[in-house]
Length: 242
Length: 242
DNA sequence: TGTACATCAGTGAACGCGCGTTCACTGATGTAC
DNA sequence: TGTACATCAGTGAACGCGCGTTCACTGATGTAC
Image (cartoon, rainbow over all chains, first blue to last red):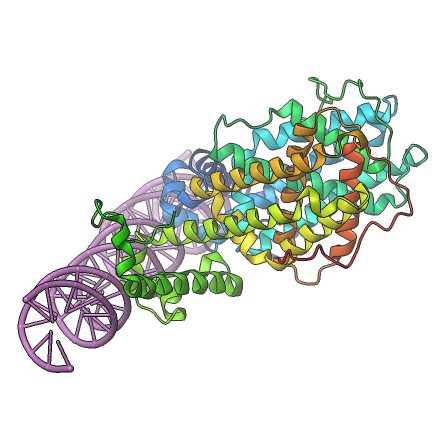
């Protein structure tokens, strides 16, 4: 459900006729998405605090009026962008945590790959992540959706872990999945804040962080870790792009 | 080092004479702190986004001019408040992680107590934490100090763990301390965001969260956990107030 | 196929509110003699 | 001890910038006949 005004209410008795005017809808839809893309780009370049309506529409080669024809107000821009991002994240999760994908892989190795993948994704989306973290403090809509996303991801992780329950000593897998997601998301969110503000500080490189987070998860779940296990992998699960 | 204008440059040749005018300094110092307190209160009540200079000075029963006599600009208010908070946090850490305090306590129990204490502190300071997280995204000063604080805390934790190195399998205690702090701070920061925006959602209660985080840390460090160990304690280390 | 009309989509100058910041002034506190 | 003066501290009305939002208008696309 997007904020764009589509012809939802037009000719309610003949919904099939929606097809007769695709060009118009397409044009405005393109504008809508160009604005969203511009906002994303603007945030990546300069952070949320520099996000202005005029700046965004200029970047989108659109105009202020066009903006307000698509979005009720500036808030909706961030909200909608966040929505789009969360949908992508959930789709990615569905692929990445599909139990079938990991059927042949030992559990520690699978978790290691998944964690490095997530670390990687957060690394690439740092500024966007940071923007939403920052805005969530004052926009319940975004905070709520973030929490909902975490819940959905935890659900997927639970299903994944449940398939291997016999290998996992932790007594409550549902709780465990929830806590794992909180730990990973939380750690990586605050890591974003560090990396964006202190470029090239003496902070951990991604593979190290991934390895240690994996160790933490395995330890938390009670899965024994052979000290010399290759905890990190360069390769990512195929078909799942950040 | 505070932002308040003290008589740093007055009579550089006779520093002892600073003592002759305590009353004046005291008056302005009080104003300074009243403004800081008001800002803190304002954030706790309504979040950073509602923080205005006029709002703060009204609450502090001061005036706009007095504000600008103490602070160069609005930014400095947040920066200074954060500084004050970090100093308190570090002092608290020094007490809480003093190896002497825990000499008689088994390591898992000590860690459990420490973790619940930190969970508790973050719980009480939710809104302040959230404010700084949010602002850190656009204010490198605050992001940097947050990182520095994490580093200092990690250093304290390292010293604490190093005293018990024989009980801890993790091969690199320095790295481990660093990662523990990132995990705890990160998880609790993002937890703040959830709790503030979704009052009474179906989220974990503090003692549960503390217990699971303790489990994660113990697992990460490689310390064996007896499944039925009492992981959480109501009592906090004496002498360490949130 | 062409012309008239209706609706959709986009334009950008102008408005106005909120809030940070300034500044001319008053009051309080301390020093000199 | 008292009076004159200097400095510190505080006051709050007024200013002005930035940015979100509005609105009267133009252009584009589709429909009717």
